Image 1 (tube, rainbow, N blue to C red):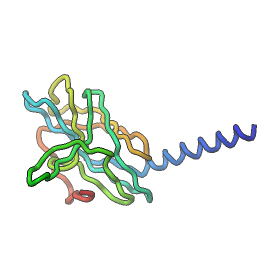
Image 2: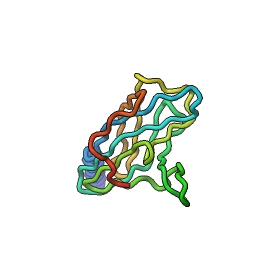
Image 3: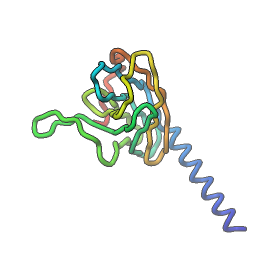
Image 4: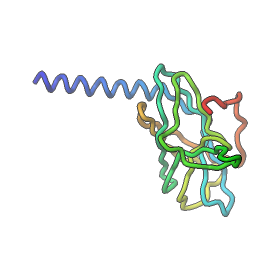
Length: 155
């Protein structure tokens, strides 16, 4: 009986730690751009804030509107700007913010059954190494929103 109580207490501590870590991650200004008729893919953008004392890492994303959602970045490789999938996730240091914006980090939405249209919105679930999952509603806009401040921390 004592083993069971200790196991139960351990599980409760793990859950409360995960809940506390999830509370330390904030997602602001989520958005996606309306797609032209021939676009095969879309992207989601946002700003991540880690208000906690511990570092975390964004390791994946999912949405019911796409067959696949991948973490991508634009990077200079050999003097050429390339878009590539980020292997191993994106670090989110303690007390920091990381911007996902055109020309930088973004969530690539692939295998879409149809084009996204302005005025729509969709759920996007972000998976963190420590904080677990966090789901946000992403509005689809005709134009990029005006970003507040210069959110370039983290790249």
